[in-house]
Amino acid sequence: MPFDINCHDKLHEQFQYLFEPELINELCANGKLKKYLAEEVIVEIGQSIDYFPILVSGSVKVLTEDKNGDELLLYYLEVGDTCAMTLNCCTKNTKSTIRAVVENDTELLFIPIEKMEDWMIKYRSWRNYTFESYSIRLNELISAIDTLVFSSLEERLINYLRDKAWVNKSNILKISHLEVARELHSSRVVISRLMKKLENEGLVKQSRNKIEFLEFSAK
DNA sequence: ACATTAATTGTGT
DNA sequence: ACACAATTAATGT
Image 1: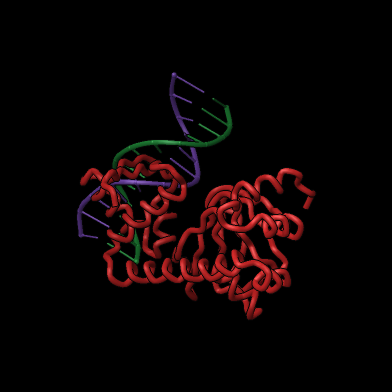
Image 2 (image 1 turned 60 degrees about the horizontal axis):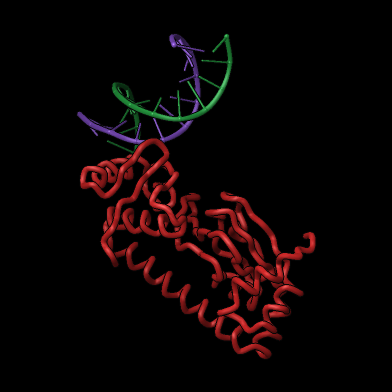
């Protein structure tokens, strides 16, 4: 990892409201910045975690997998987020039960786990950050489970499209029905039928490998 | 520009 | 769920 002269300024800019300047200096001094391209796998299921990642730019999706190898999207991570899973793995030294895949080109800052305990004691903002992350991730999970259990696939599909549009900051999603089906743990035919229905209802426009999500109602 | 092929999407059973 | 039809994008000639 080459030393990045811009790292310092960039981090100060990104995290000025999250961490005190002292801590950001420590982040620069101890963290390693790594770039990932879309579709790259950051963490695989069963892998152990030896660095603590913080998302500096881009976005990442977090998935589980059942024994048949079928996937299910849990949630997205955005700038400033970290994964609660890794918080767990770092402290308890267990293996990851999730897979993390890059959604949009991403930069991650990797922190050696030894530093985490130091900072927990030294920096109030770090304590807040880790607790906040836990709490946010827990709520994300609960709401994911909620829609999973209580909503029809149609509602899940709409939620999925909305979330994806949000993290991509675009209403135009470049994705095929097959990929959607995999992330929602459904089948391609079912998704195609639902998409057709949504299209007739005027919620989406679609063409090959492209879905345009039309939602203007505030929420 | 046209033909061939592969991938994606649509529909009926 | 499966099979197949229809459509579209990609590639070669």
